[in-house]
Length: 311
Image 1 (cartoon, rainbow, N blue to C red):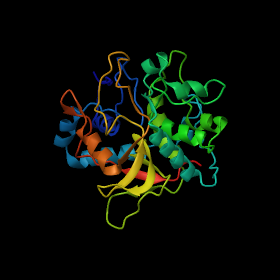
Image 2 (cartoon, one colour):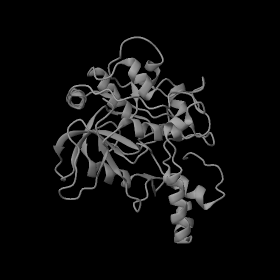
Image 3 (cartoon, rainbow, N blue to C red):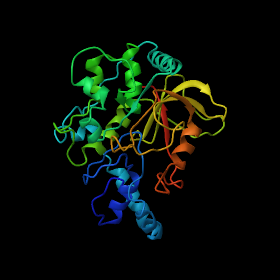
Image 4 (cartoon, rainbow, N blue to C red):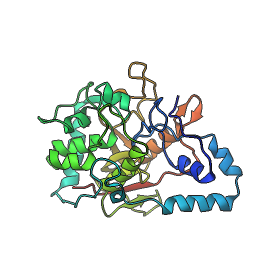
């Protein structure tokens, strides 16, 4: 079953839960086994309560939640790891080099394991890029035994392309865990907000699909919502459906959400890079079902944010 949530005692808490995204299956209460490729919005049962609540109260709660989103630096000393944002180091042709490497991976037909931050996947040895950051040695080639998530694939490509070095990559994406692979309380929630901010450090824009509106350029990072629920890179082309074409590392749109009995998670081996579009991924996310229930509320629009990555 999906990750359980601490009992909700107020409308504010319910709204906050609805704003979050549950990711993986975990039987440890309050541990959010998820990342930018979130699998399900948690506690959908609270949706009806909010819909039947006084609209002014609900709006005020949403505003309060939004107003209290803290900068990542606030969590320095509260949670382990780096929380003060890195200075931006621009690399000549950095975005294009990342896109070129993702194109190479796509054309090579490489396969790897999509594996999010679930402690079980870490304990089972499926978080390959994360584990590499904690060791020395060269970056291994992708394989069906190599596990990483969507934004890690983007930074893997950036490292292969020489846009990031290992020390910089560690500062950017290394999640600090307990020795058993777990973390404390809301650490991961705050981490995902931090990653959303750091992946597009400046000049972010929103894609709405409106005629004449801004669109991502080749090599731009494109992500769903400010907490990086899914992270992709623009190819610079327009897809057949008229929306921006993307390099994406996830099971969607090619494969359905599938429970893996071996890992006891939604992790699966898939194409390392798929070519898809903003609209195709968005429709696929809204179509996701878990036990017959939508994973994403179709009445809640995604904010599609894009801009140059931290290179």
